[in-house]
Amino acid sequence: MRIDHVAIAVNDLKEAARTYSAALNIQNVEYERVESEGVAVAIMHLENGRIELMEPVGDASPIRRFLEKNGPGLHHIALETDDMDGEVDRMESCGMRFLGKVRAGSAGTRVTFIHPKSLHGVLAELCSHPK
Image (cartoon, rainbow, N blue to C red; front, side, top):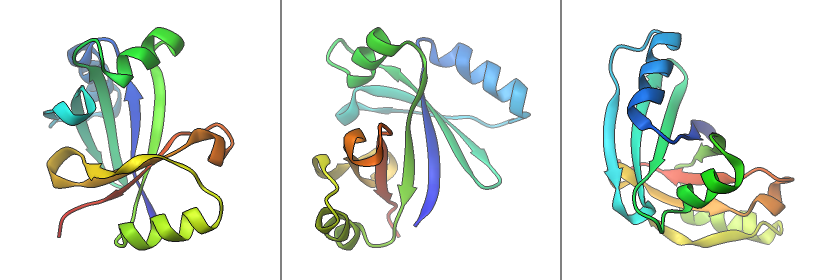
């Protein structure tokens, strides 16, 4: 397993992308809407991973609820695996709890989220990119 990205909840995607791009000297930002998760994202590639800024789309977005409760900031870390089903089974056997089933995320990636109570208060996404 490896760290895939760090996700940050923001109120204004364009403004946050400008700030992060300037601070980290990133020239190219990829934008995408992920309707299934209720977010618009800005993806910035670093040498050893990505930063994913997330802005809520619609009132039912879990990111909107997160921002209302916590304000902008770190939302989750994402861990990449080549064996999604095997890792989910292994983690469940260790007592990890998940928030829902494995589902489609951005760019055809399979994702599921590990409940924060299973990881001492940290929300983690388990992801597997298409080959």
